[in-house]
Length: 458
Image 1 (tube, rainbow, N blue to C red):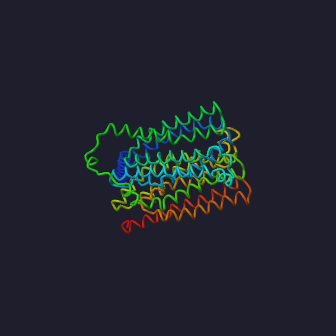
Image 2: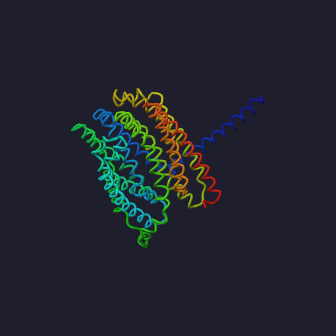
Image 3: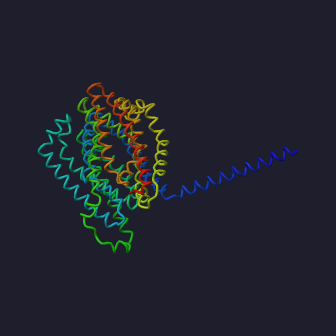
């Protein structure tokens, strides 16, 4: 009888402990759901998810309208665009989030736009006189008719980046989310309508090229509407305008180190499309371009959303001398778990999946995607680290790392294309090197952030 009473007491105690733990977990869950950081992440993710969902709905229509060769021409053109856009304003837009005063941030916006205009004009002159010779040397003559679009799109891209960074600074993530959905629908509708009218490479390139202008315009209208509804606070009234030279000097690390790093990174990321087009034709480039666009969706949906929200949070933590390593580690671990499902699925059934969704002529793209999914997974996991570099003023280290990683990627591409002489071999070589690079990036950033916190971020 006594044993039964003791057993009952133990059961009651265990039940009590379980109830206490469940209550603690419930309280923690409610606290996390009320967290402003989590709400911001969910806002950005929801907007990006809607935009990506609309893009995916339109993609089977667009791929069937235009075909691999047209998509290859677009891939080469957009590859060059992606190389040029990061340096259009010498990466000053990334500094918009950093100043404490809005007056300084507005000065950076003006500086960025002025620089973008100057750089675009210089590029236009270069392409006018030497454009055909440049693309001829690269082996991508198919984009010759569209060369003068490059400086225009570069200017649009700089304007878009400036608007996005201002919204991140003001933490107006609901504006970003809403515009992302509206832009995705409008832009893909335009591309699809163009294909129904005249499905040529020129139509696909032109309708895609004006996407950044449309996106930037919609963001600026969102900012304008928001400003019109809110009165100007007294602190802003008292702020004196900042001379453009002040932020130019204060954030000179961006053009000195960040701009070359971004250029080198963009070249290494988009070089596969150019190499495949030069060695194996536009269709191979089209397969790769579709893979890259499709596989980067989770990175833009979740990885970039997390990075955008964490950027001002990391910056504020550094200004308050708080540790950021645990914050980064938590974000990386969460992304690693989330990314297993989409990237693992593509690795397992990529060829069938691409053939079913985009049409039978895209099955080869599925073979590419099976391997590229592994590289994109590494990029996805490392996204929080990319925004920590400028926040920690690690542009010099970032530049050195990018030079080494680009050298490795370039070597891998030419080993696959020249020595192994195969499209798939080139993709596999690129994937292997990319995985090593991004895992190294995570280790370096976590180690350096811990070391700099111990030194007081000096």
